[in-house]
Length: 191
Image (cartoon, rainbow, N blue to C red; front, side, top):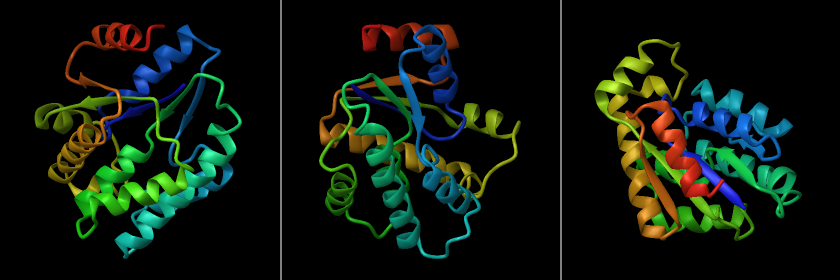
């Protein structure tokens, strides 16, 4: 089973993934971008916000996604795999960057994933006060420096995209207590 933990930065998805991994060490944990040797290099480029072209940024994310599928997801197709981010983030960020067609983006992501979208998506949804507080306590990367309104726009695009695609999902209130979120996730995943 292939599960995406999705959401904008500081929403708590990484914390929840760590909790699941501690409880179930047999689960394969990965992330995009950066889950493969190529992905580590792509992540460096993407997080410095060095690309002037949003199309180049999109294509680099897609190249990472295709490599991640080949190197991580395909070899573990019979295992339980949880990825910190994936194609839904790709859709959200690309749509927030503007000038991209939803159906075209879905087609490109389907191509990168060889037609294999995740079985389930857990989308963490935050709000401006929580995002403001959490981002004030860290050094921001190039994408985060685009602004909090931008990140919330990405979040809305992710939410609308998962609804439009009809992939089984759980929306999580990222402002809730960590243990409440953890219990909700375990119940949803039937772990």
